[in-house]
Length: 187
Image (cartoon, rainbow, N blue to C red):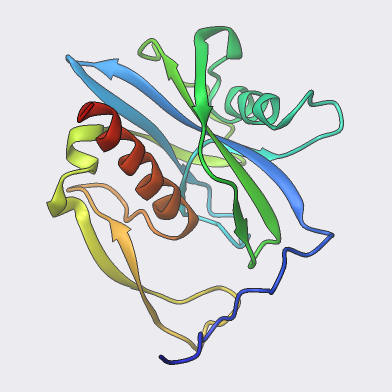
């Protein structure tokens, strides 16, 4: 087996920052949808990428679930009073930005409007789960890591017609959500 081009650290650095993100599900037109955001182009490591709403833990947050809910309100204007948190997915360490990301899954009524933080969010994507988790949505795509722009990697991703490609940490979390979803509907 070949060595990794971008080796993972043997352990998560002690100075890794924590963040909470929210995979927000909501019914629309008689099917379950997932809310994603397209990050604003700001020159940051995750600039322009598709992600879950969320961000960095602050000392005023009760816990990482509270972080995910606070950031969802700040980024897209959906308050925690309208969201039922269903559970959590696995924590994921992101070396390029030195974050431990804690993803939570929530359920909400269909959002009437979004109030975007233009500094952080370019757009909101409402994606039907049935389309997202269809075999035809799974692709491989080539990316250039911001930490190694000289390198081209082929990575698993999700692609829906007319939507930006979902790859990286978000695709990894979506893969786990898909496994949990498939397990739940086959019971």
